[in-house]
Every structure is written in C-alpha cells, then in structure tokens.
Length: 363
Image (cartoon, rainbow, N blue to C red; front, side, top):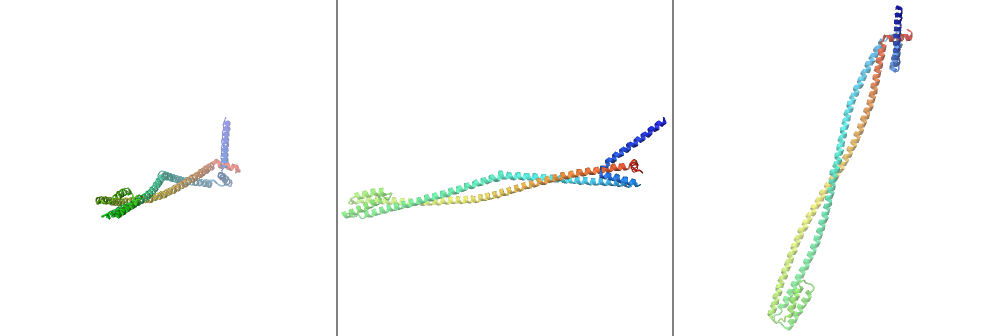
C-alpha cells in the first residue's frame, strides 16, 4: 500500500517535472524567434555553463526594460506633440482654404455682377454721348446752312427793295420835271417810265405794283397837273412802304442773327458738356478696366494660394499618415521587445530555468 502511494508520488513528481521541462522548452523555443531573446538565452547558457550567476544579467535586463519603456514613453509624447502640431496645421490650412474660397467667390461675384455690368453701362452711355455729339454737330451744320440761306435771302430782299426804292425815286424825278409839259417832255417821261417798267418786270418782287403805276403814268398826258400830283403822292406812299419793308427786313435779319447766335452758343455749350461727359465716362471706363484687371489678377492669385494650401494640406496629411504608420510600427516593435524582455526575465528568474540549463550542459 505504502509502496503504491510512493510510486504514485514519484510518478506525479516526474510528470510535473516533465511538464515543466516541456513548458520551458516551448517558451525558450518561442523566445528564440527573437534575435534579442535568443541572445539573452545564449548569454545565460554561457554564463551558467561557465559556473557564473544570472544576477548581473537579470539586473541588466531590468535596466533594459526600464530604458525601453522610457524610450517608448518619449516616443509616445513626441507623437502626441506631433499630433497636436498636425491638428493645428490642418485647422490652419482648412481655415486659409476657406478664406481663399470666400475671396474667390466674392471676387468672381464682383466681376460678374458689378464690374462687367458696370462696364457695359459705361460703354452704352459713351456710345450715347458720341451719338449726341454727332447729332449736335449735325444740327449745328444744318442751322448754319439754314442761316446762310436766310442771310442770302435777306441780301437778295434788300437788293430788291433798294432797287424798288431807286425806281420810285427815278420815277419821282421824272415826274418832277413835268411842270410845263410839252410834247418833248411827254415823250421823254414815257420813254423813261417805259425803261423802268421793262427793267423791273423780271427782277423785282415789286414789279407788278410798279408796273401798274407806270402803266397809269404812261396813260396820262400830264396836261393835268392834278393827275401828276396824285401820281407823285402815290409814288411817295409806295416809297414809304418800301422803306418800312427795308427796316423790317433789317430788323428781322438782326433778330434772326441774334437767335442763330444764341442757338449756336446753346449747341456749343451742349457740345462742351458732351465732351466733358465723354472725358468723365472714359475715365470711369479706364477705372473700371483697371479694377476689373486687378480683380481678375487677385482672383487668380487666390486660386493659386488655394491650390498651394490644398497641396500643403495634402502633404501634411500624407506626412502625418506616414509618421503615424512609423509610430505604430515603432511602438509595436518596442512593446514586442519589452514583452520579450519581460518573458525572458521571467524565465531567467525561475529556479527551474537554471536547473534546466545545467542539465542541458551536463553540470
């Protein structure tokens, strides 16, 4: 009975030892997959194989783990600062891109809805001013031509009136010679009056009147002084009418000249105002063109700025993504090394490890 129990205890101990040995071999096999852990195990085997102790190695591994964890903490803090910097840069780039978008929209809206319509209005106004100037000059030329014709008609009328007055004066002169008429005087008066009649029948607007008077005069025998005096009276009244007509023509000519001068002054004033308006409108068009050009250049610059900012934002995102990938791989590697180092340390600090190594090297 006791022998059976003892056998069972021995078998149990052997089974535990075999399981522990198998577990250690599995752990060591896994650790040897890491060059660093493999180095630690080999170093430990050499150290134990030469009769040394693992105390210094354990202390070095503890220091190494502390160093790795400190370096990992520095890496994490540096990445945290980089993340903050990245977020600030992204926020700044996005804000500047939004500012550029707003400037581009406002600039293009200003061009399409203000400057271009304004330019069209200015050009239409300038075209109308040029039309007004052409019409002003046309009216002035027409008024000048009409005034010239009026003046020429005035001169013609004056000549006719003066001619008529001269004819009347000549007739009165002939009639004044008939104081004691004789056959010779009678023939002379008839001859002169006939000449005057012939002279004015085609040239003077007063020819019909003069013709009637001359016909009346040639029909008289001038023996009756009363008839002669009546004829003289009629000629004198006619002369007064001619003189009144002459004065009226002169007054009308003076009024027409005054009216024409005033009209010319008015047209010249309008012409000067149109010219000033053209200068102002040309100045407005030039200012509009300059503003339009400046706005187009500004919008182009802001589009370039936006493209640059978008490229910088993309570059920042790409760089941060690459840095994040490197960070993740680095952290994973550090965690792996720390974990391996801790596993190796745990293995080294187990009493069974030292026995296992010694058994392997035959100590």
